Image (cartoon, rainbow, N blue to C red; front, side, top):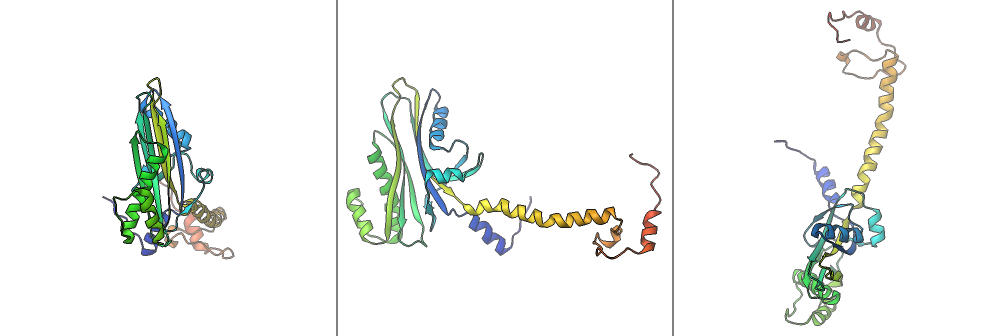
Length: 265
């Protein structure tokens, strides 16, 4: 078993890298004779087929910025592990209505987290499924913020209560619905809220900068080696100052070390 230890600064940096600072929404529908392939087609329409999606639970990070789908897709690389809150539904019954939706509720206080909710259903339109998902997210946030409301009220009434409280600034949803293929092919609908973290994108740049800083040192080692200015291993591989000539006795000792009797060359 291997144990990894990190400084507090390192842990804080790693933690900040794991908190998304941007989010975008996408959806799609796919049709194919195979169920899995229909999901793949839906992902292609959503623009996410080239990523490895990881489903996470439903917390909207504090201060997370909403960006457009087009902008978000430009930040993703093929094969990247991408965290998202998403839902899907599949059906091979002709003309049967299906829907998948993600709702969001964002608090007025930017330092607090919000909620995302997933919902899939049969027989619901975009509007109906979207309102349900939006209601779920808003209700979870309202209970966290201590907003009192009657859960039996219609969504429209509760929405007004939530927004009038001044504690919830926005609710919304992204929903995809579709009618089952008339020939009985698999139809899959997909909706997602996709997280982006710009901090992760700077890691490669930091590594490149470190390598660039090491390059001059490596070049100096090579230069001094070629000039015979590198001391023996007893000197702990320390570089000599560029203007200092090594002691003659050390050089002579290095020149006349007996060669081993056997060689691999």
